[in-house]
Image 1 (cartoon, protein in one colour):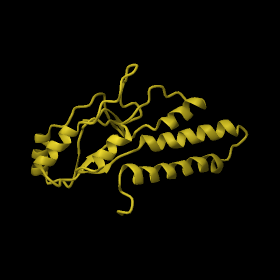
Image 2 (cartoon, protein in one colour; image 1 turned 60 degrees about the horizontal axis):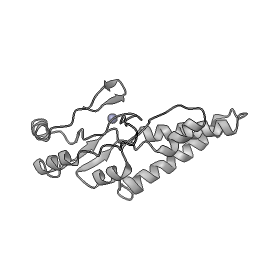
Image 3 (cartoon, helix red, strand yellow; image 1 turned 135 degrees about the vertical axis):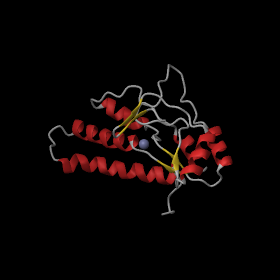
Image 4 (cartoon, helix red, strand yellow; image 1 turned 180 degrees about the vertical axis):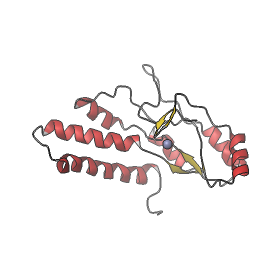
Amino acid sequence: MLAGIEDEVQADHSTYTKPEEVEDFVKKTGVDSLAISIGTSHGAYKFKLKEGEEVPPLRFDILEEVERRIPGFPIVLHGASSVVQEYVQLINQYGGQMDGAVGVPEEQLRKAAASAVCKINIDSDGRLAVTAKVREFLAKNPGEFDPRKYLGAARKELIALIKHKNQAVLGSAGKA
Ligand SMILES: [Zn+2]
């Protein structure tokens, strides 16, 4: 179970996946892939950190145990935005309020992408990119009311972000 909200599904806390249950579930159901819980969560506020505290690392020990039990089985991660701080800062700078928004460091996701994890779901980073650029554009161009203009800036940033994730984090460039 992942904490956070996605569509109509909501949970207020996370429970780490038990590798033996993954093996049991996969064998009994014959599913093609399975999303597990190793420390990611939905939304832009993944961790409540106290002053000076760092984001807790993903539970790679769970992932390794799953791989050991069912080698080659494709694992999925949900809630894997890194919550790009550059966007959070832009949002806060131009009238937004997103204090304490934090996600999973890209370095951790890079490591996960090189393992049995075959699909990594990222949504919040895209939402942050679009919101940051819309806020920045409207603040800098207060007379502008054409969505083609302010959404254009946002779209450009979203494309750049997705290219970056594919090439530098997920390792999926050139594999389609
Ligand atoms: Zn999800």
